[in-house]
Amino acid sequence: MVPRYLSPSLLLAGALVLPGCARAAGTATTADAGKVVVACGATEEWCAAMTSAFTAATGIKSEFVRLSSGETLARIQAARSDPEFDVWHGGPADGYAAAAARGLLDKYVSPNAAAIPGRYKAADGTWTGVYVGVLGFCSNTKVLAEKRLQAPESWQGLLDPALKQDVGMAHPSTSGTAYTTLWTQVTLHGGNVDQALAYMKRLHPNVLQYSKSGVSPAQQVARGEVGVSVVFSHDCVATREQGFPDLRVTFPAEGTGYEVGGVALIKGAHDPVSAKKYIDWALTPAAQEIGPSVRSYQVPTNPRAKRSDKSADLAALKLIDYDTTAAGEHKLELTRRFDSEIAKAPKS
Image 1 (tube, helix red, strand yellow):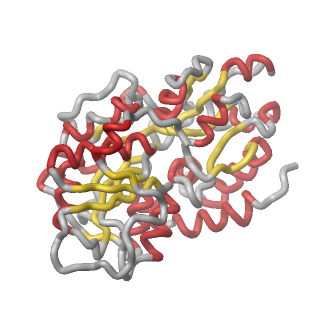
Image 2 (cartoon, one colour):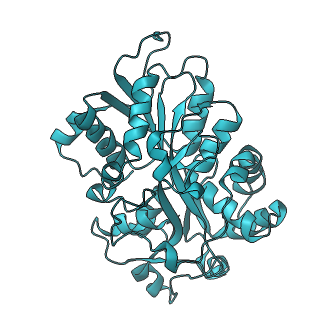
Image 3 (spheres, helix red, strand yellow):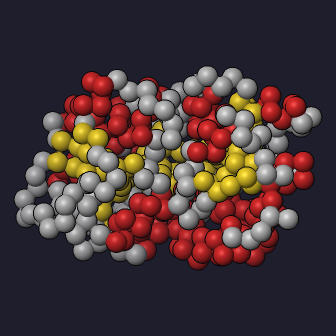
């Protein structure tokens, strides 16, 4: 997990909830309690900053649990009869699409959603985008130089046998980052799932291990455990700022995928009025400009929000046509196949 940067005063502004301690079952009430519990899919620092700022701006108490995308989906599914969360905030929107397909989200079109471009929100109002993050390669140039290797600049370059067990990547069943990687391969292979999985199988011997969280591979490469990792580029930039100047971001020439970090109202939320206020706030420029203060350099979706010069320049990159809805619909099938056909396979 990324080290904490927040001051004690900021952490106290919004209560930090540990996993498993969000809301006891059986506490549903007919009235909104003026409190919101958030399942948060970004870094812990970002989650704390967001909930703290919301409480400061509105006076509504807020709590969060930091979970990866797959964990969030599983927790919401398991507690669907008595939800432990009111809002899902952060993490790739294909997870939200998967949740919506299972009837786990309530439709809510915030008045502030009108400012968000159509490509960054669900047409039916089940989720709305709050940021964009781009997949890239995070390389430790010092480690690679010792092996006389350059930072990879293509997906094919990542298959180099010289990178055997030298690539960091998360598992797509738990990590939204890794699932974005997997769906990127599906897209690059013209929608052919078998060919996409064949690429991942070829990559498998080069992967040291499949971590639980999408941020972990950036830490692996920073510590020199691997030479390169597949992460969202903003996570590499943030890790470099923690005192690892040898880290370098490159983007694959064939094209790269991206996440639309979402926000959504969980079906059956105990405090839906406060939850909707949280969603309204999350779509404002002020909320979306908080990220860089805690080294989260995603691109804001609200055009009026200021973009950090450390964020990826979307216009300068070759982005694939990432179909969030299709990615969400195929998430369960693809992650199951990845686990059985690739992750559990021996490494030659």
